[in-house]
Image (cartoon, rainbow, N blue to C red; front, side):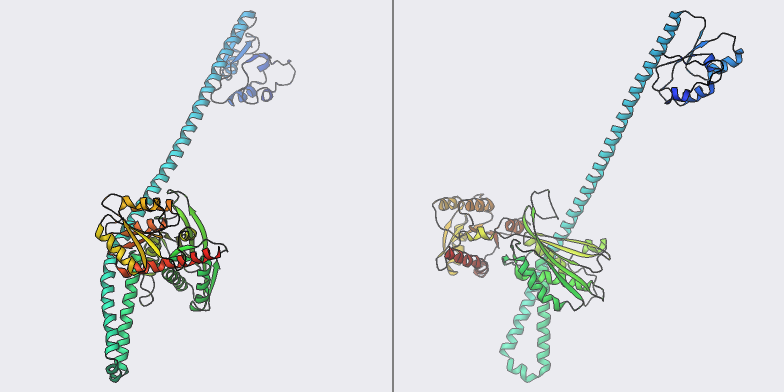
Amino acid sequence: MDVPTKAPDGPAIPWKDLLPDGGATVAALLVTEEALADGSDALVICLAQQPPWSDLPVVVLTAGGRRRGPEGRWALFAGLGNVTLLDRPLHAETLRSAVRAALRARARQHETRRHLEALRLAAETLEARVEERTRALVTEVAERTAAQEQLRQAQKMEALGQLAGGVAHDFNNSSAAVLAGITLLEKRYSTTLAAAGPGALRLLAGLRDGAERGAAVSRRLLAFSRLERLNASVLGPAELLGGLRDMLANALGPGIRVGIEAPPGLPVLQADQRQLETVLINLAINARDAMSPDGGEVTFGAAPEIVAEAGERHVAGLLPGKYVRLWVTDTGAGMDTATLARATEPFFTTKPQDRGTGLGLSMAHGFAAQSGGALSLKSKPGRGTTVTLWLPQARREADMATAPVAGSMLRALVVDDVLLTRRYLCHCLHQSGWEATEANGAEALALLDLGEPFHLLLVRHSMASGVDAFTLARAARARRPGLLAVLVAGPKVPADFASLATSKGLHTLTEPVSPVKLEELLASLRPWHVAASRNEAAD
């Protein structure tokens, strides 16, 4: 160990250089009293800079009473802190013993330092874990709150849908009766009405206009409540949006610019064309009404999108599958949070009383859900609004696989455990020009295994034997890929039955099944048969 010394008339010892960190890296300090004569203050300052765990041992070889008086010496030594005094002359073993004790004490200090460092790291780790868990809890609470809000909103919309559906049915029947009466008056009493003058004709025209408006409101309510009949067909997004742009360019006014973002090669979608066009037109009109008098821009867009897992939900109600995402974006005034939360409720509107019924967005919401997709709204005041529709991609190639050649007999397999129901459905198919074979749930797959060339599977959703229609349809398609499948739904099907069936490429009919309803569905499927016939002819 080096012993700092200085000559009687030499320079002061550079304690800052010898103990730059307050002595934290020094094991012990052995110094003579003479070396402290003129530099003790600097040493005390250096020792005061020690970290909290450190108490550097200082062994001082005193000079007896020859250098200072007793009071000055004790004041000098007290300022050094952890000091051991050894009077000279001293035995070598005494010096070695004192130094060993100092080194042991210093080793204990370093051990304490390591323990303190470990405690500090443990405290930091614990704090980090607490912060991480707190963030996780905050996220979990937020997700739970959002899920509860989505459930509350879904329950509210379901209740509104049931109410709206019941009202719409009754109102639609009343409107139909009025329209039928007006038509009957026009046909039977046309001469009398003409003789009565233009006033009578204007009155009758006003009655017809009012009844038709009521019927239109009923249709929108039925769409919101997911009860309106949809005739799904295969649609090309780019062609659909291009046709709307040409129509809306003039209808929206000269100040509104209409843009299209639909790259070539988009997959086709499956939806009711008339209903989808009505939804998009309503969204464009809403966008126009939200614009300033100087005008603005409405953009229609389309892109493919895949929802891979059930947890990967873009919006509530959207199931895993392949979709075409359509959106309508405007540069209008936008909506605040409170307005956005109620935007899809029927009859809720911020427009003046004579400029809207408040059914446009509610109809769009119901249409998307009934089509097997979903709708979402994003909007901020002053930043415009974006309405996004997810609609299922059409599996056109698979559905065409078993379509018959033009002119050949169309064959259907009718599956139900109730004999009378089977025979009734077969009778309806015969009237539409189909050849029908009936079977119960257990017999259906056996017939398919025999290689029977069926083009259509018509199966009841719930059967007494416990055979599940979805499972049967999947097994039938495994044997005959592309087989058209129609599920007949009774009154006790789940709320998401139609959307689930559509997502699986299945069609639905609701009981009671009438020959007219069945014929309408078969007519909507016939374009696929024709297209398939052309493909087979080309091959």
